[in-house]
Length: 286
Length: 286
Image: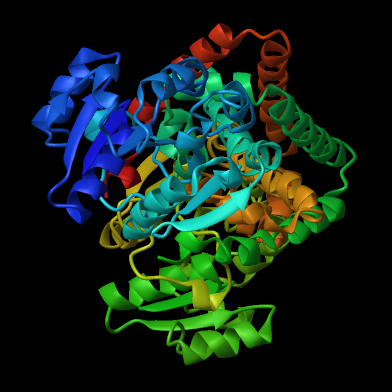
């Protein structure tokens, strides 16, 4: 089996790791705009060699894990190069625009639109980890647009990596993911910003920070190169969730100003049911 | 040594656990408005017996771990009951009002104002865990108001529990902690609320939630009985931080509306330095 990974960072590199572990005879080649990433990925044993789009023709699987705005430009070109038996899988955190740009592509049936919901706040080839996808959800969109044999090939791979599959249409994907992922990142980035701005004058403030702060600002370590394009591509949905979030914060503030602390208690008490909801998230069961 | 724990939940119970482990001959008694908590704490071996305020007179150490509004009412009464050699330590997340209510108390010198920055999102006696305070920061306020011998007694105890001590005045404590702790909780509670409101109509949204969401909403599991009083007592500082946070979110939203994604990139890139800051938080080194 020959696999080509386009974009050999946290996501692409972790795919490479797990594919090598589950398919000992695989040959994995890499493509990355950043040549130092290629060298690093070879040194780390993530890929066997560098390649170019010309190397896509005889690939069995192509995994594309690049920022979503670049993906929207590159995916049609990648499809131009692939062979008849090649399945192209992406890992983009948005799906509507990506599906749109290839909707009329003559090789649309070689593409399977995916969003593996997995990652960490780190990036680059050295951030790649084994087992990242084990037990994680992989959202597949417009599955019926992919050739049946290529669906099978991709699903067999995901199964070996231990992923749970969910099918969804691209618009619903983008709408829902804005709430459970994109908004969390904004909330965290702006929390980090608010506290850093304060800290400029008050150096020892962080001596007082505990694990609660660490948990809420963890996502503020995330890669801007990945996230600015996500906010761009999912603008309408993200603006909607962000507006609702700000409204809720404003109403919390109003209750504080009105000394309605019983009301605040009720608000927090109602939100406590997030406990049950989080217990339902598969990856938290570990 | 005789220790009395007033409020035998996560914080008081974890103190009891560690004190028993480090002082095998200790006798620990408990006081709690909730009688089922007392029974549970005895069953769990956190305390040896229940007591009342009358039992405070011959206590060496009294640890008060109750919601801060209740603390403001009870602390003067507790001081009325304690003996000359008793040191009363609190664990309140706000310090200015607490220090104020006992400022003129004839037994002010028996009280050491503390805020151990440790905890989890769980509550009640069963949430008590060993080693909770090991390596954590304990902010002590107005240390000079406490009798020297009683300071020594408390510090010896904190040292055995592995705590780092920081001295601060109550107003600075309340101002700083609003940023690094209280705001995180509001951010998390309102994030949870925003997503739950959406989820009412869209049941499977949480199937898409990953570890990033889990991390940012973790604090939304926290006890409203603890947090409503904190927001009440630290109202002015919390309102200030909340206003700055909302302003930052509004400016992020404006940049999105203006399609200024390069600006968003810069914002996130600047905030990435939270990585270095978090590396400086002692408890993250574990």
